[in-house]
Image (cartoon, rainbow, N blue to C red; front, side):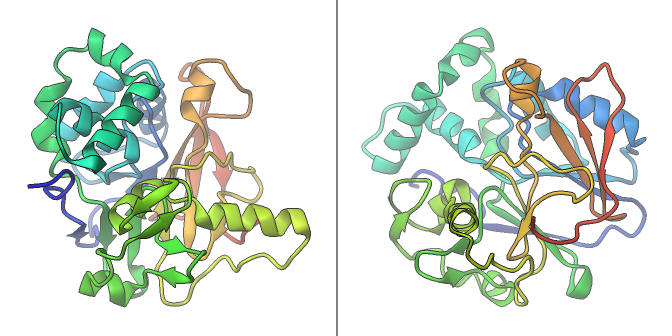
Amino acid sequence: MRFLENNPTLSRQLANPVGRDFVVGDLHGCRALLDGLLTQVSFDTEKDRLFSVGDLVDRGPDSAGCLALLEEPWFYPVLGNHDAMLMAWIYGRTQDKRQRDYACAFARNKGWQWTKRFTQAAKYLPLLEQIPLVRVVGEGEHRFHVAHAELTNTLSGDSWTDALLDASAIWAQKYFIVGFDDLGTWTDHVLWGRSLIDDFKNRAQKGQLLPPPRQEALSRTYVGHTIIPPVSDQGPLEIRSHVFLDSGAYLSVLKEQDGMGLTLWNHTENCGFFMDDPEKPAGNVCASITKAR
């Protein structure tokens, strides 16, 4: 079995008839911020569910605490590129190019620093191998998705739709991936791609017409990977049905940049909360997702 072929490409969850569904941005070892937010929203572990856009580990102070979330029955993550990098490092030496590239990226990002302190990281490998690349939640007009980076390739115009996801249609395509900066398939693209946000920024700088917030054939898709701090009166950025929730939690915890923190989105009630200090109350992000800004 080659690297990442154990991980499901897609997992389906039924709608939640008894509680709320939350989606959290990239954690990157910031467990205290998450715990603070869950307390603020009175998260009920018996009824509510927490979906994660991935990147549990690296950069922040408590990757071990974030990995421990994999043991919780109410926690539903997708795989992030940093989680995949950890897997590649745990597997060790190989002839597989993709695994070597991911393991080298783990070393470049200094993942070895926290794994040297936390020697039990490898015990989570079986749980990491079960994390899907995409989650599809619910059906019909209530359907939504969770992925790490993006489900669109603006260079080629290719994009996942609900129908393509249901058919598992285009995973094997191979091409150059913006953000991965190498050839890869949609497996790599879902973990690393940044074509959508790069296109948005380029259009904005040139004063061109911005892409629409919604893509008719793709249900709302929560993603992370690219840090986009929310604006309190407008909510998270939405482009072509992708809602960006990575708001730079680790930069806040490490006191490296103001205006950063962790975003927790309440999908059920269409509102969000933002925290940059676990000792302070969470702030409200927005009453609803409205339009791209």
